[in-house]
Length: 302
Image 1: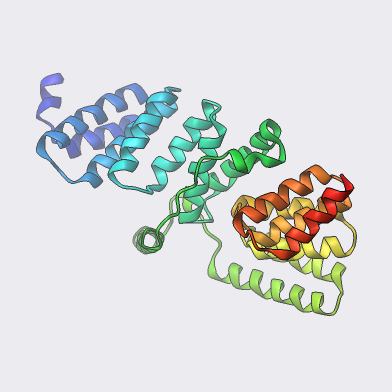
Image 2: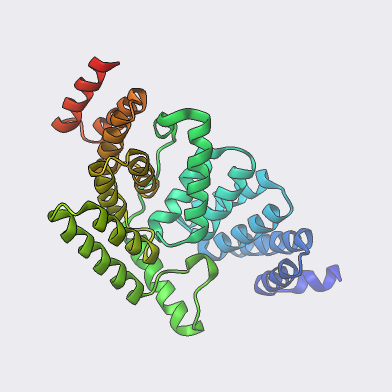
């Protein structure tokens, strides 16, 4: 058997590794991927092939609970081809298992920048937000490592590749399930209906429209911040905080979400959280006068 395997090409080794992975033979899969990696590195093949092999071996390590090796392989994969969705999600999961929640959050959040509809990235971001809030309190975002900014070219390339995959296979891979165009249009229509009701100061009716809109597209940041505004207007402050939190999971530097969350915290007399919200906002936009004025008011109350 070993002799036969030595004569296999790296593509055959990769295929054999994939078959082992599918049947739950993760150790065997990792060995096959390792041989394929050696072959590719010897022959000087392109970085994309190597990146996939390292990512595949990382998946085997992750399944076997070898999270430290999974992190190493994902990092190599991402060095070869930056912003790969699979290695980002795998490394995020490995960091999460290792309880390195800040690093896991950064990976999940980076994946969301590439495609904001990836359930694994959305769920991971939500879990890490809860963990980090428990560990670090409301100021957890300040302790995060920098989140890389994904270049537009990467997002466009991912989008095009996904469309081509859809046309070719008729389905998208599980981690890229995305609301259909009709669903997004429906969500937008309901949001606009909500906006029209806000202009008439019919906040409770607007809340209903925004809620319906979010059922169709739960990744639309402005729908959360708009509904938070309505909740503030009808004195439902805890709900406003929750909506702002949802928006901030999708965009940690969102000015409206930070400001409205600060307003809600002020009304709930949680002045410490309010000050933290405003300080986060002023880091992003130092000359925001509304935030500066609210900060002065709250500091006087503390």
